[in-house]
Length: 176
Image 1: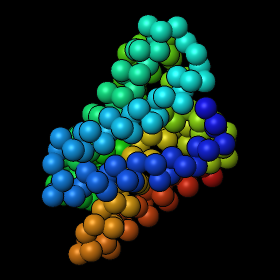
Image 2: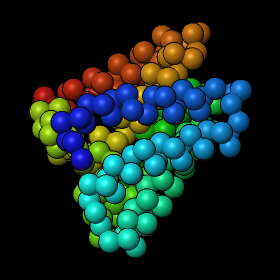
Image 3: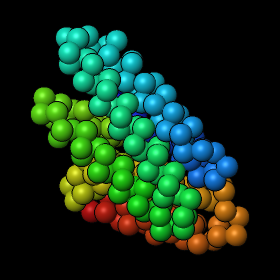
Image 4: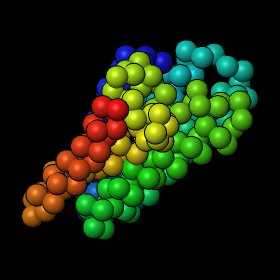
């Protein structure tokens, strides 16, 4: 709704990823938090778009389901090897985003979670190489690396190196 707020996506997944990485929290609770995240993401869109009721219900159900899946699956992943699994969380975000904008033909890429980044063309020049999926991968993996950094003191150096490599790859693609 507000493309200029796209930069908030750089930290938007951190709370749910942090919550999910905590082994003391039950998976059911994490998936409930994914439901709340999905509703919080979707309800403002519903209020603004004013779509017909059947389409509104599809939008609400689909986006909320995507966030429940993201919360649950990323929690299972992050409870394993935190560094390389962070790359898997980025890939999960890409798969869910792709599913989101292809499963309901009328959405198209307008319903991509990362479409709002078009407000910042100088930051997303890597689109020419990776498309919208590249933005989703970068957001999911870097934010899960941030969570791994916060939660796993013993491997912080490895997490930092992994994040640095990913940032350097993205930056070098943006230069060209």
